[in-house]
Image (cartoon, rainbow, N blue to C red; front, side, top):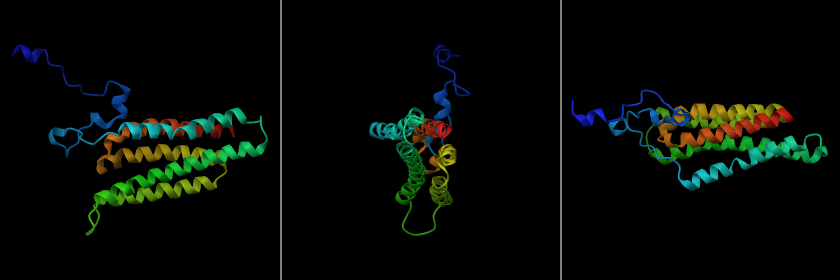
Amino acid sequence: MPATALHQPLPRPFPHKVSDLTSPSHLPDPTAPNGRLDHPEPGELARKLGYAGLIPFVGGALFIWLLAGRVADEPFIFVVRAVTSYAALIVSFLGGLPWGVVMRQSSHSGALPEHHSRALWTGIAYSLAAWVALLMPPHAGLVVLGGLLIGCYAIDRKRYPELGLSGWLTLRFRLTVMASLSCFLAAAQI
């Protein structure tokens, strides 16, 4: 055995860090050359805007916790409605993302591939579920919306690789954790 072979690192058979578990990079992409994952990650602007999108979630949950029982009902109800509406809007936005990707990737003629059809159906399901949650009383609707955010991420973990978007899953995980936690905490104080 050559001496250089002794100094090469051994391949890791399983993820060793939390980031390895939240990123699909430890899973080979069978369609990529040499099994590498070649799906692009979000750029700096997308990451900054994604994190900025958490401001209404975190700020709203914080205001609900600080205002509960300390202010008149009207401002409190306004903040609760604002957080609930924003959460429903974001779930609908997540449903629209695959539509944009499918529109860009699909040809103008012929039937859609099955994974494109599934992506379109799930996109509509997200929006309809968010609408139903918005019609519920806020304490229940926020719990449903928090669950929908988690459910959207779980489904998108399968959809994104099919659509060539695996690189976005780490950002999606982080945003989902913060947004859903904010929904659950806000609902707990209502």
